[in-house]
Length: 153
Length: 153
DNA sequence: GATATTAAAGATAAAGGACTCTTAAAACCT
DNA sequence: AGGTTTTAAGAGTCCTTTATCTTTAATATC
Ligand code: FES
Ligand code: FES
Image (cartoon, rainbow over all chains, first blue to last red; front, top):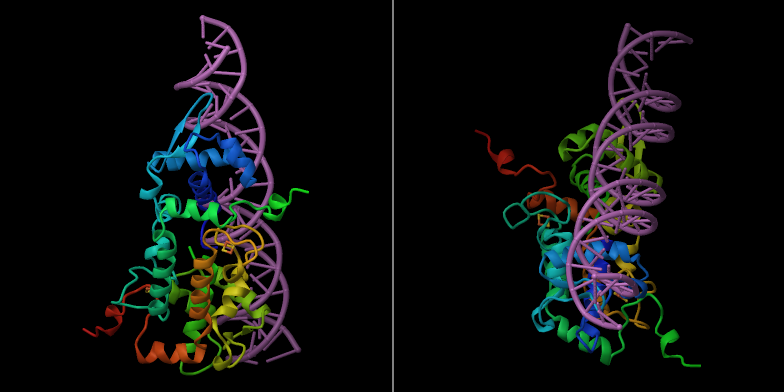
């Protein structure tokens, strides 16, 4: 698995917030229902992202969670690093120490290329661009197929 | 982490076997010492690979483990699938069901490309080619730097 | 100021991965 | 052939991750 479950949920929450037209605080239980995750579990993950300065939170009525910075200044690799650590973007694919050209493992050349592409996937687009695409191209963030959303019987 | 610890050890064992000039059975404790892993733990991993038809084993003196098929017929993606399952090469990077063009997530296009490259890394070269490169280019499979190996004081 | 609402903090529990120890089998030696 | 050594196989333990539940603290609204 490329990302931990916590990281998947953190990213999907960020994408959801970025795709919302009004940038208000949104209650965690609302996000939890959409993702199909316990709100308590999600609270822990988002609490960590808040401490990392990626999100901000507000207690009480009309409270919830929101992005801490402008979506044009936020990219997904920050969330990956905050939750799973930077290992995915730096470490040897075979788990050996000091990955680099100095003492390359048999997969180093190919992995350093693939790793670069993985990093690009998380870092090239800002949350602003991702949010816009989610709305315009009807990209999904939730488990349910959008057919059940578009169908208005 | 891209691969589980078990998968890392399984791959490194396969690379070690492929890089050995004589294709005899090699005791697991020898491989364990080289990799810096408990032989008991490694046994469990290799036992699984034996059941999957990737390796073969022999008990008793002069026993050990060896590749089940010709190195020219074996590729690393088989080991990844046997230990970690096929999820890495098929599943959505955000953990949502039914990854595909039908209901793409915001990262689908980029991830399906990166995923293809990761699969190529494990599937393009055979163990025969990898074994030859390890010997010829002195590529490392062990944690220790080769400086401690090349230096003959 | 009372109340409703929401995140934060803490305790608890189930699951999976990482690692260790014990047991059974095979080959060798005498 | 029988004991001994060497090794794989299998059972068992520990720890991290994932997830749930309960309690507490904060804040807006009335
Ligand atoms: S040394 Fe293995 S990927 Fe760099
Ligand atoms: S749907 Fe997410 S990667 Fe394919």
